[in-house]
Length: 231
Length: 117
Image 1 (cartoon, each protein chain N blue to C red):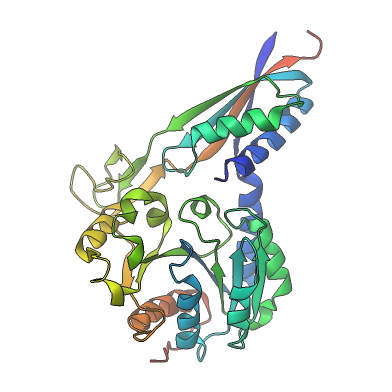
Image 2: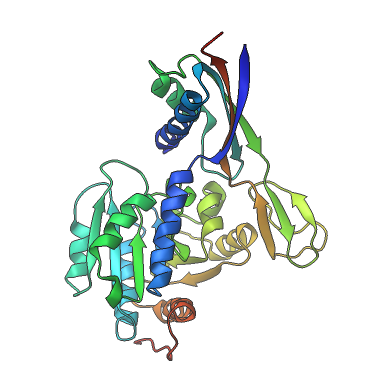
C-alpha cells in the first residue's frame, strides 16, 4: 500500500528562513542591503566603486563580494578604504543566505548604513535566491546587446532598478536603447532605468542620478538626515 | 545551473518526511514550480536521478507541476494569466501590475510505501 504525505514546503525553505534572519539583523541595525546582479564583465565592481565614490561622504558602506574564486574584487574595494568581505562559492553559480550570514558576522554592523552585495556574475541563478536584501538591482552592459531582456526575463523582473552600463559604446555595438527600454518597461514597468558609464574616460556619467535614487532608498531605512551626493 | 542545489534541498526535506512517516521507500515526489522560476525541468530530473541513487528515494518518479504566471492589476484589480513577457493589464492597459504566482518552488507531497506492507 502506498500513501500520500503532504509537505507543502518551499524548496528553498531553509535559504528563505536564513534570509529572513539576515533581514531582521539588518533591520535592527538600520542597514540597507543591495544585491547587485549582472553577467561577468558587465561592470559590477566598477559600478560599485563609482557608487562608493558618490556616497561615501554621506553613508558608511561595506561590500560583500561573491565570486567563484579569487579575491581580486574585494582587494579593489579595500584599496578604497572600504570594508569588504570576499565569499568564494567554489563553483556555485549564486550566493545563498547562509554565505551572507557568515559575511555579516565578520562585518561591524554598528558602523554601517549600507551593504552592497556583488553577486556571482550570472543572469539566471541568483534571481531565485533571497538573501535578506532590501532590493535587487541589475546591470546590463551595452556590449551584451539590447536583446537580453527577452533572453533573460527573470533577472529584469526581480530588479528594482536596471542600470545600463557602458553607454559610451552605444554606437560601436549598434545597441538599440529605445528597444531595450521598451522591453524592460514591458517586463518590469515599475523599474527605473539608469544609463551610466561606470569606468573609463567618461566614467561617472549618469552616476549622480543613480546615486540619488539609491540614497533615497537608504534614507527611507536609515534615521533621516539630508541626502548629499558627491558630484 | 543550480538545479543540483535545489534538488539537494528537496531531497533533504523528502527523506526527513519519509523517515518520520515510517516509509520503506518513496515512490513519487511531487513539486510545483512557477513558470517564472529559473528552473529547467530536465536538469531537475537529471539531478533527481543522480542524487537519489542508494537512498530511500531511488527509483521514485519525479512529478513537476508547472504553476502559471498570474498577476493582479494595481489600477483596476483585474487578475490575469500571462506569459513571461507580457505584464500589461489586458483589461485597462495599466503597466502597474503585481505578480500573484509564477515564481514559487514548492515540494507539494510525496507518495510512500510503508514499512509494514
